[in-house]
Image (cartoon, rainbow, N blue to C red; front, side):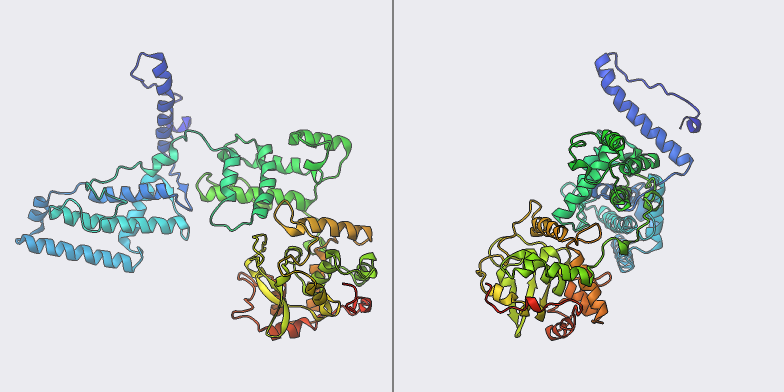
Length: 552
């Protein structure tokens, strides 16, 4: 800035001899001068702030500037009439009304895609040193507010010619509909270059990011993202301005994370210590390190957060792309979580829980339902007893986020999770309906599963089930409870089950849209039954699980 302005300092009189007042005025004068200097530099170098989405107050300032500009240098009604060449005043007013109505119709029918609006937008962007990329939400917002302001200013001109203080149907965004005065405004260029009274702390920005109304996030997801970003914020420093986050700062976050062990916040030697101290202790003790996937989870949310800040004009650009920041992972995604092999399935379903033939507990039924029906663990664990019911003579699972027993305790992962799917015949053979018949209609299907602190029934059950899988020797980095769902998906492919029906059964998203609505335009229940019953695991012996209905 010094090189551009060719000076290092500027003296300004504060017009006071009182020291206390001078100190108070100095900060304001410094901010104002810095704003002016920055604007001069930006104009000299044609530096414009890219805006992808305007905040309501920014958009209002732009609209009022257009309205004000359209009314500036307006001649008096007498001058306008005299210069028009008209002889009859009424005819003069009538023609102006027709012209204003015609322009309004043209602009509205073209949705603002008209050379008049293009010129207004161009001038507005030049004056305010901004640019709105084509296709961005900001470009659409700007076009709309410019069109509204131009149309309303035309009607205001007519009302002034008619000596009316306020036009009919005046837009209250641009004038005070009580007094007819135009609203004052602060030009956007000054809003963008003025220093904020207090820059928001990073943790407050993260909170706004998490509560972004444009994104639907469950409380569990928000809590998870909050956990990742709180670590990132600690490394960057909560008082760091988001505009000051650099590529070097992002790389420092990555480098520190790479030296942290898994579950570092829960390890006693590291608890309640600063991140850098955790890293030092972890290095000294030779602790394990986060996997590339674990590190990249933090970095992905960091880049997503910075991208959100950029779209709201808090920063001009993201300092580093995720692709340049992430840690290379030698393990392919498809190898990170495996299905259970036939041997592992045999071990699981011939283990103590199944050989003892006691079928009243969740540890018996939940894995079987996950394997034969492909449901997610929480979808199974949160079932009400009434969620197993008969529709058109077919027994099925009603997977919904609405509880029929009077408590609001259900959660679904996505919109496609909402579905009614038939119960696999094998589960009926194993005695699921007999178990279901013993449960009170006003109770959960599995009374031994308690809800977790995060509001999910699967949280506590997963701890129990994974401990059991570990006990019988089939639990590991690649094999956890979710492997049942992977095994179900592999079985869909192996048994050549219709791909789209498979998605509907499992509640998987169908591309960019939700999986099929079972009761809408999707598949008939009979079609689902026909395909589901073809799914089997022929290499596993299931005969010992066939129910004689005597163990309930």
